[in-house]
Length: 398
Image (tube, rainbow, N blue to C red):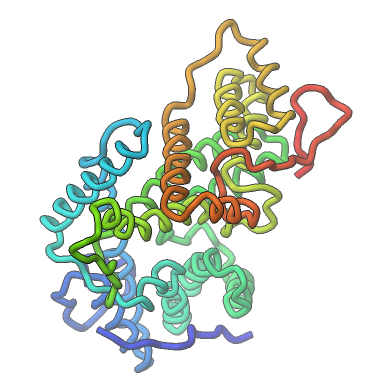
């Protein structure tokens, strides 16, 4: 079977100080310092079938993008208000202050924002560079690295028959998978899948570990996604600005400026759902459902109580979880404190929905709820697959 390259090249013009490859190179490293130029240069080399330079420049571009994302989150953490905001007014004020502060921090580190074409934004979002990278590694004879790069691309492009075939090809060729050096650290979905695998094997200690890791990463990833909505720093080329005029009120101007931000934050809540096939309910409730039962199985009743309580804040009508929480409470002398970080995120998500509702109207929000376009806000009316023959701690038939 042949390994297929990525298709549809778009040429433009990219950088950083990092290279994962062990290959010996005989050319001068680039002096520019941003991932757009590095990636664009890698595409030029790819088109010219110079796979060694394609591999180098793609690695540099990915490393620079990762570094900028890390620093963006650090800037935001330095600028963000502590705790959740309890009103729309405070929520708006917090967004404005955090955006201004974060942009100032990033400007000190990297200068003016990059002007990103939409194709480049989409390529990095869906990990297109890894498609070019896997084929370059294949051409250079490094099948282990090619396999790892192909797996990352497939994770974000599950319907790609080309990459499915490539992964199948590499899996037969690469015998020692322990030698694979990861480009990206495990994310929430990776830990979720490992947790579910352990859960199905009745290894609840391992399941609890992986699912708890998945939850922590989910909280971090959702926050990072929301940060990029308002303070992503790098700008779209030809980004349309609101048509404001002298007679518009401050409220009109503010709503127009932040509608796009709130729409983006809204989409962050569902980004994990698309990465796990065959979910019977939304990602966060599903994760919490697995986690509360696994914690119970290892006799961590306090943690099980906390997780079940947060599940009910998402889906208050779930009778199974209501009974589970009642059972957990009976085993404890007093109710434990809430899972503060998760509770703050859920409250923030609800404020996101309230603010977006104020902007686009409640009718539109109800339509989205009906169409299952919202993901972790409010009572979704989700139905778990329960065993009706038991009266406590039903275990879903996953």
